Length: 286
Image 1: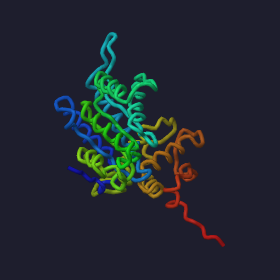
Image 2 (image 1 turned 90 degrees about the vertical axis):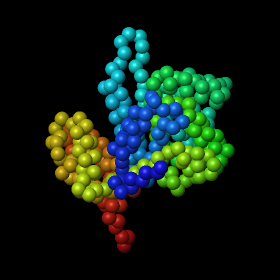
Image 3 (image 1 turned 30 degrees about the vertical axis):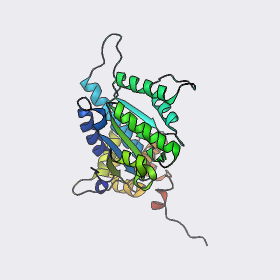
Image 4 (image 1 turned 30 degrees about the horizontal axis):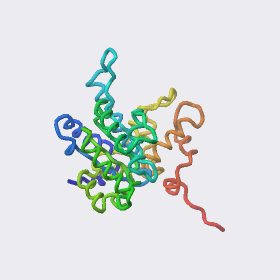
């Protein structure tokens, strides 16, 4: 089943809900039928922000329900985050999986040896959620891309974990085409996350995101409620793109050393090229 949520825009909450259901099933179902989600976004919509939000939420939930053990036993590591490297081969990708948990590898090790070590260590560590970012870099139509897609399929069958892929315009790339692509697509539920709308029915999702960001600011002189009050202005500045929003607020927080953010401060920040034309009108050459 494919789930499109483009009507509500950016959806970390939707992904969190999906992953939560998958994690609840991860201990009782064979790995081959554990939930898999694919986040499809446009540029600067905040896919990495969504992944990190989901990972943090799942990690905190696991920590609350499973206090660290006493003695020499190691605490479980519930979440893994892996970035698909440019031009990834199956061996370079599985090496990234190994690097995340510090699994030692050598250049002489074969892909199969590294994969076996990863699957054993991830299972022993209690990995329940695997986040794979920049999945659009894979092209199953090429030889190396097909081998990498086969590797991901094998990992979903061998690891008792929920997998979440995130990429840019994945439905417009070769990722889900061909035999290998069809295998990936046939196992994934698609969560389409575009720019966040200012309003969705009676809700104001963009303002809610701003409130959450403000609540996590560590600014001594900042007045709570300032940023949500400027939600219409911030939406106009960023066109609802979460990546642009977080960069704008982050830059404003460190610009003048006043430990607070005002609209005046926000006005001084130049944004990325995608968002900036919506704020600063072009001037005609004379």
